[in-house]
Length: 142
Image (cartoon, rainbow, N blue to C red; front, side):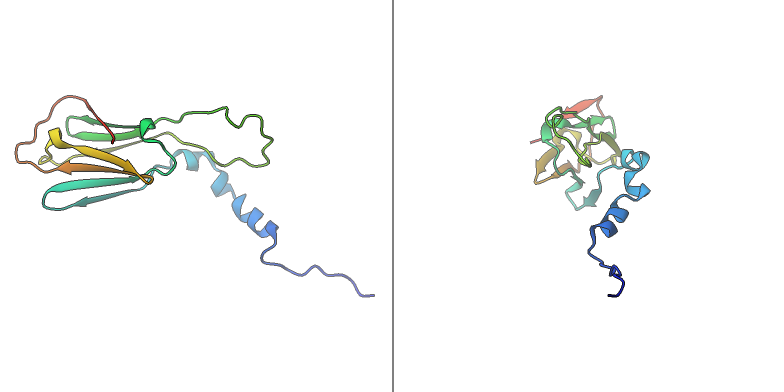
């Protein structure tokens, strides 16, 4: 009988294990700095900010305006829901974040509107020639 030689198998789980256990993916500093991606657009009537927040309930997101600064934040809520499970690997985690944007001077602060749907938070910033700059105001998410 000849020697048994293990054939290289691209789909062998060890290939994926090596990839997903790379230090880049396990670096806590890398994960902590992650903020959700955003799209910022403008048309004749408004500015619009879209924030990708899949899996985050709107009740846990806070949108605040402080004069001309708009801040979107999420505070991580820890849960003991799965504490009795014996995980071999646990990567599902919620990270807190805060993201701020300087608003243009032509935003009508009284008409800012936000909506959370299908994992996307959309904030509408209507344009106005007589924008007011008031103190800190919380903006309700619908």
